[in-house]
Amino acid sequence: MAPEHYFSSAPDSELKLRQIVVQLAGASYELTTANAVFSPEHIDTGTQVLLANTPAPPPGGDFLDLGCGWGPISLHLAIASPHATIWAVDVNERALHLVRMNAAKLGLSNINAVVPADVPGDLRFRTIWSNPPIRVGKNELHNLLLAWLPRLEFGSDAWLVVQRNLGSDSLQRWLQGELPHEYAITRAATSKGFRVLHVKHREQSV
Image (cartoon, rainbow, N blue to C red; front, side, top):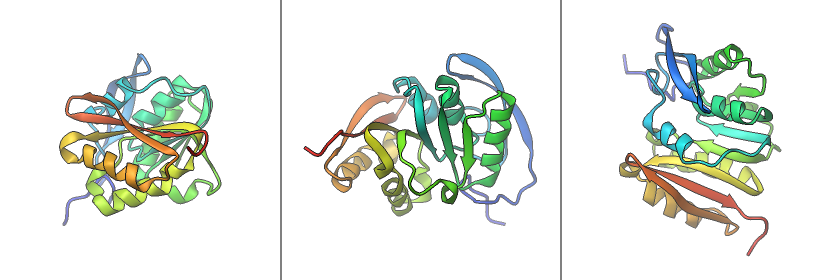
């Protein structure tokens, strides 16, 4: 049987839950992960770099965690901005189940863990944070980013973490060429072999 990928929509393998202790929003939490999701043993290095090198999120609004996995970014955002609504989006149903379990365990009622089709089509986001699924392939990754980044509100920011040797610099150039000119893409940080890319949807066309 072919190995399962974390971007499989419905993993066939038997569910094997595990408990891990992580640091989120300045505190320690015991959370639940499982097999057939991305980085079940710990918060992966890319996500750690993103969380350590991104400003505090806005106090409210609709936030998007694109490719949420078992939920570290969504949980961080929900804790840091309790008045925001966090849309934790993934194609992996097992990952979404884990996000819901972890949100309930932490008493967080402001996370919606859903597949992409369940996000209202007219929703615009106050911020987008993502450790995008690079290994789905370049074309699918490009389609994913072009579907979601234009849904930023005017004046809002997206933060993406991408491994340098998996094409972060070429992705930055591609985004600058493909997104409308009111979007500015810059490198916000470099750490542990990862780049944090900042996408700014400016207030008006320039």
